[in-house]
Amino acid sequence: MSTPPPLRSIAVFSGSNTGVNPAYVEGAQALGREIARRGLRLVYGGTDKGLMGVMADTVLAEGGEVVGFITRLLSDLGHLHPGLTRHEITENMRSRKARMSECADAFIALPGGLGTFEELFEVATLTQLGEHHKGVACLNIGDFFNPVRSLLEHAVNEGFMKTEHRDMLIFNPDPAALIDALELWQAPTVTKWIGAVSAAPLSTR
Image (tube, rainbow, N blue to C red; front, side):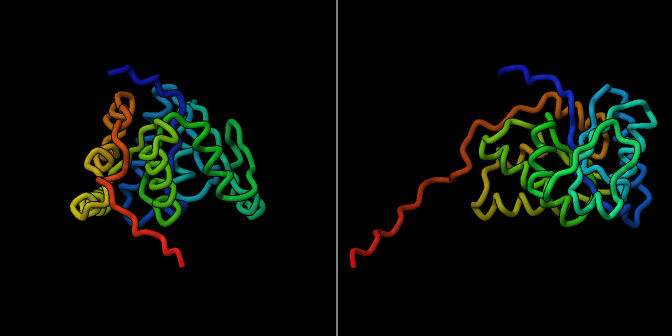
């Protein structure tokens, strides 16, 4: 088993709101402190809103490096964090996500909404397909991601996912343990396809 390359940058996906549970903000701050303590670069969506802003503020306050990628629309609306180490403005969400993925060695999702879920599942899918070999994790603050774990288990039980791909996602409420697990993470070596289904012959008419 080969030794994984060291992590240098972690992309964090999170909500542009802070949620109703104060533990979400506290967890984002704890993760930010841990990222800065390890000398890792935070890559994120570039705004000063919600948990995204909390994360950036914490890493910056601890002397860490923060790189933000924000869409032109959000920048024009005034959502760009003013104190980032570096930022890029992208034309749309697709290019924003692509740049974040290119600049990250691993991914962590914090609690969030549709955008966070979409980003989480996209990078997990790319790992499943082998388009990149980067670990994906969820900081499971207050059991927020338990329904996601249940959904993945349901997909396995119904024959749509292999256990190796269910298990490649890391869930932990502790930031240090989560990053430790990402440091040791290895990509699955199985394909996504379960068995083979014969296709119906094409009509010659």
